[in-house]
Length: 145
Image (tube, rainbow, N blue to C red; front, side):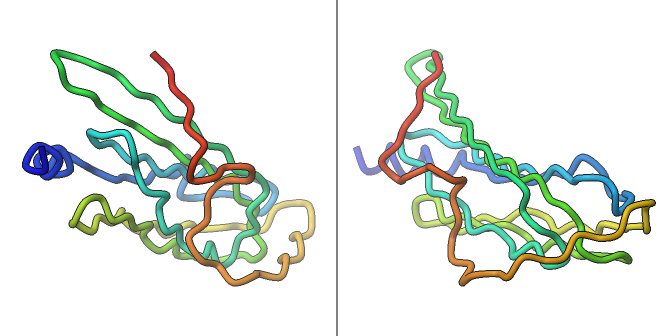
């Protein structure tokens, strides 16, 4: 059984994507992290600090599918970000430990150009340990079949 679990985690992947790489300070950026692995329990990712952005909202979705006796679990975290400065802002990679392997996403460089409205003041950052979207707890599970 442990051998099967080890093999299942070998199929894991984590990826991140943004909806734009050049934006105005008037716009919002969508940053999405997706973890895809076999098994019921997937870890919450360690997200980047999003320096240069305020987190406006978060969302989480989870999908589990069964095919030919195999189960696939996909969990996505979406962060909507508002820029607090102009220029080139780097978003560092997100990370997750799945089984005994460490995975990380690519980093992104976002160019923020001054828009018509003034920039939003940054909100004070609290200690940024691994973050899950608001309301999510490690025991909370949502199934879509």
